[in-house]
Amino acid sequence: MSIRHGLLALLAERPMYGYQLRAEFETRTGSIWPLNVGQVYTTLQRLERDGLVEPADTVGDADDQTAVYQLTETGRAETEKWWSAPVTRHAPARDELAIKLALAVTLPGIDVELVVQRQRTETMRAVQQYTRLSRQADESNDTAWLLVLDSLVFAAEAEIRWLDHVEARLARAARTGASPSGAPSPAAPTTALPSPGRPGAATTEKSGR
Image (cartoon, rainbow, N blue to C red; front, top):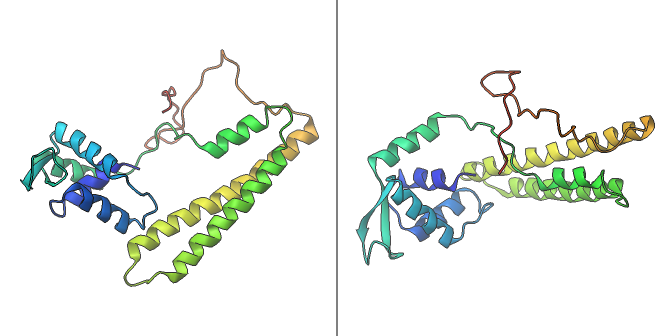
């Protein structure tokens, strides 16, 4: 999630200081992604360095936490660009669960089925929690919070379907005697996901984060 653009979007509404930005960000996203105030001020310093924000009226020095920040014209243009552009899929972020299962099937002594079962139980618990929170929300006043919860529910449900797929794939591999390690040959070229703008096109994989 781009904290950088999130802060710019909030500052487009009105000038704020760091603690206000943190409070507004957490309130509007239901505190699902809590921010450390130090992270907020570090981001603000980088935005100021890049010419996207500037101190407005201040109670103390510009470097003090009482400084109020506002968008520059460049920052406002950057914010408008963010709103108008879709979120693109580049190199996939590291997914701890996918990495965990990929390693589990290639290492001896790991009960992969048990790992999957425990993860499914935890993910189902999360779905139930998010669903319960959705039912408690006010449809007329909590639209932003409900959108965040919907996203979390859909992602968790997709994870459960993927875990079902993992079990089915492992069962097929066991029947055919296939090796659980599907790593490509070191000499084989590696391709990235197809570009969203060009279906089916493949590009050389960029280094991951």
